[in-house]
Length: 576
Image (cartoon, rainbow, N blue to C red; front, side):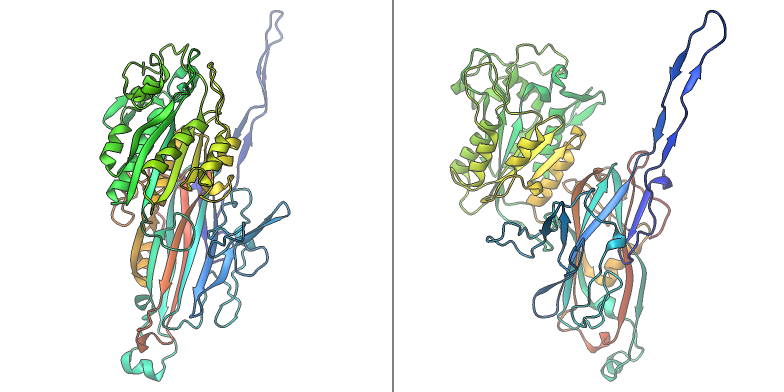
């Protein structure tokens, strides 16, 4: 099914959105019901309002060109000063892209600006397409290069932000045309018919640029700790642990209702399975944190899966998290000797509707971060990047015991600053009613400061937990190439039917070119403005022959989205 009232198409070769839909508001007058009888009554239902939902796809980008002198900024959106380098002014502060991170420039990020969101991205009508870096001529479209030479190359990273509602997204091309152009004498010798050969000659790569840095990233060794909230609010309905009454199947087990910890199990196991399928050079471990009982002096935190390259063992440790959480939260007693085995004690009640009075209280996020950092220090590899992925739905505070909790921001600051070593990237995931401010202030790169939005995920709807872990998995493994072929063939794929269907969760095994658009492994994109990047790079090889002289290649590029609700991802019967 297609709801054409929720379609937003962006043609990036033009200055304006081809078609769009804003909010539609429908209001009915209040209905007052009554009689003139002596015995009368009035029941009124006033101020009724129906408001149509919105589906708004916003795009920003950075484009570079290399004609022998290194990468040159060509065009960007937004670009507040028109120099071709992505930049934006928000509340009097200017944020600027830097091609490569600069340790001496705290504003240098080497990526499309993470500060851009649904509120700050200007409309495409304000886009400046820059100038041709070779000829200096103003460009009226996104790509309008008039003097491409063998050895030249370029790249565009598009940042996609789907606002307000989840939806499926396609990348499209249209109006693809080739022309032989000027028929020079050298070309006439090898191409007497003056055919358009430029599309076949240019080599192109289309991929998910997970870190939005305009560069394809291969696999690097990484040591990762998954630091998970095992407090009662992740499971027990009494404390908000039940998300809805829909059943959920996780690892072959089906539950009659969905809890937050079920979604964590689904997401983390997909995370691990994806890394395993990519033969990633990783070690993964699992830490947990809860609170403490009233008669205890030890926070219920620990590492229950040490770092290991055996990802099957990690997957096994992430099975049946309902029971493991219950063992920690409602288990009998917790001492120092219990910490390594507490999740496996087996004496907790995993029924989310059971009476959870008297459970361990408090949430010791800081201690969980400290435990994970100690594991990275003890069993991490010297040559591997270090990451700690921390998920919580609460706020760090003391339980009923006597232990004073560690500051979660202090623990994260220490981890990023290698105190103790190693310096660790801290990613945080804030679920539901968690303290967003604390978790965001914890998030940041190794050696850097906290509060970095690139390392923070705000998940208002727990159902989005698996897609967050999917994005983090895709950032850990080598970036996924959609197509590596001639530019002509890439454009042909983008122009075929509805275009190339993009996947909102790259950790799922979906083939954009071979699988059906409505394949269950293809996920919709979340509608909360989270940045997803798709990149297209191209190069005219240095050894291209004279047959390409004077040839031209024209095309439109765009993105299409439709709402996820009432649609299965199959797409409309609409060409690009």
